Length: 213
Image 1 (cartoon, helix red, strand yellow):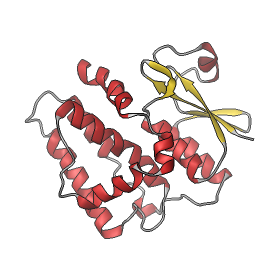
Image 2 (spheres, one colour):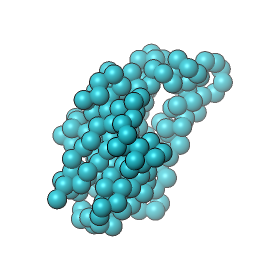
Image 3 (cartoon, rainbow, N blue to C red):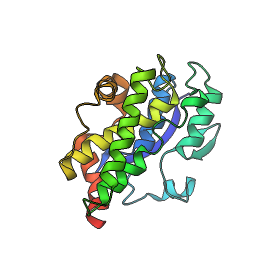
Image 4 (spheres, rainbow, N blue to C red):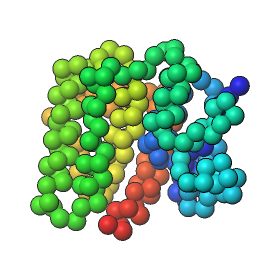
């Protein structure tokens, strides 16, 4: 029986899959584990009553497992790993924190209005560290197999690439070629294409945050 998962609908297009990297992380996990699922799209700007009844906090993703609705992508991914252990996506502990500061660094730089506040440099250092890690350990975060660390990181890299180019005219430096090879490999993959929001919806999704900062 297919699992039901509630994910973000695109801003301004409630019938289209939205741009939430945390939703995509869970969808990618389901894809990698070949677990059948059906998606329910939730318009976060106009949350339906049925959704607030199953999840009063109103956040996505939420998934129904064993007749219980479970929220939080960290929790969901952990449960899916226990329930569907094959193929294993467990990240070896020494690689579990790779890239963990990348997304907060990106958000700070994206929303910054001061070019001299160090946020650009902080993001650059995070990307550099990831590139060096992939050079030493790649092609994936934990070596030659996909793990949960990749599925968490790749949707965020997708947002970083699209949002920074659009709002800041900023691109991931070309010298980070291991990182570029990594994203190229992922972004063209069937499961990634199937589970990612379209570029224009990523831009719309960040516009409010950028304009209000």
